[in-house]
Length: 481
Length: 115
Image (cartoon, rainbow over all chains, first blue to last red; front, side, top):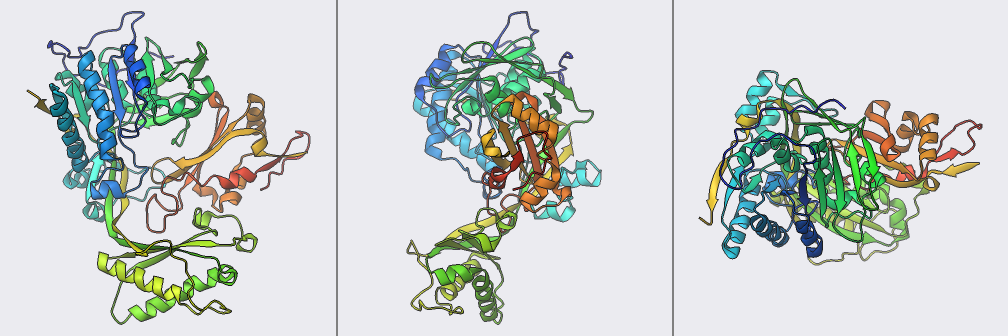
């Protein structure tokens, strides 16, 4: 294993009490990180959390975000997690952090980590501080990127494409309504160096939440980031895995140890190694801000019945610093209607019926220039896999189908109209061979149509060459003072 | 003797790897089966193209990962996550065609994986 380089000089240490200071490691030193849950708001058992605190952690970290729930949440400025449970999780973490005098770091606040998400989570933190009488310095690090910055980067050739992602254009930037970048270690380290006991970060590279502080304290980057990569999912990497249970990571001079905090779980070489695959294109080489985490030489060792030690994780700094941009643009408004059919004649002819219904709807709407798109999700045929469904229609023998009418229009009203007319047309459509003439659809709900609101799509998912320190400025707020 | 992949794999799953890629993990029950699959290239681009009705250029990689005795397959999403017409935002239910992979258990017999 090559000595792990530090990606950048950490900010200067300060001497105030409780402030993480930069030091070099001495043999036998450990840095313990408590990760309570896979996503802030998913919850965790109190007993596991208490057991974690008994292990005297040096840091409590939590990842709050993901692009997995889709483009809506970034676009609409909403969290995909529930406020009551985010508050519940944070209350345990913030009070424990103050009791033990250790920092609490929250990454990708509010799920998507843009300004509205950050403010949403900040309000929850302030509420808890008031209710619990907590005092601390709160470091707030937004991750929003102004369009002008992206435009300039595009013009200067500092935007790099990722595989399968369409090329970025000035139009796409213009149409985007929310753009964030994933911050890496340095913005978090800057906040910690200023003495913040709680750090609330916008969109963030998940492992950085757990790795920023130990790297400041002189622990090597490779193992710290790899440990962070596993801890960001808490006990998902244990067996049996759970996204709603705590895990402890113990960082050492040149390795790290994974320890479960519930009696019913174990970390095994297999469970830890298998997690390295999770949600990644290539399990051995994981790119992130500042460089590449190279796990090709990684060795997993079972050190006792429940714990695994990992060695050989290497960090290879990138020649130029990149951040990953995430942006969305609005594409209209959606209304849906959910219904079923149990009629064998209709089930057998559904492939012909749906396009006929759409044609009839379009013909009726053409005079009024109603615009929009109709999608039919046909569960029982190919509702899950769409065009990738390999089973030929002739081999499908469903006895009933669930149909979701998915209407997207330029305004909510047009989407409503498109959905409503498609639903009523399909309900009474006289398809060839029909015997049941009272109605073609079984609706489980009244009202039958549901407004889904604004629709977004990912418009930006690109690397931008940029200096992290300038993109992610930190402000410090005195809470409870 | 023909065998089904379900007899030798303990995990077969799919998930997004970012909004533009879909990634599949096949984790084998033991080292020997992993080595068999790796050595004989039973999971190969032709098979993946057939199973998911995609073109070779839609495959980013088929990568064995020894520490987890696993093979990872990453392909292009047919549309970006959440785009109009989406069926599976998380990409967590696209693995089913892999469950039907059959292979020849006897290494002396020719490999003709089919689904």
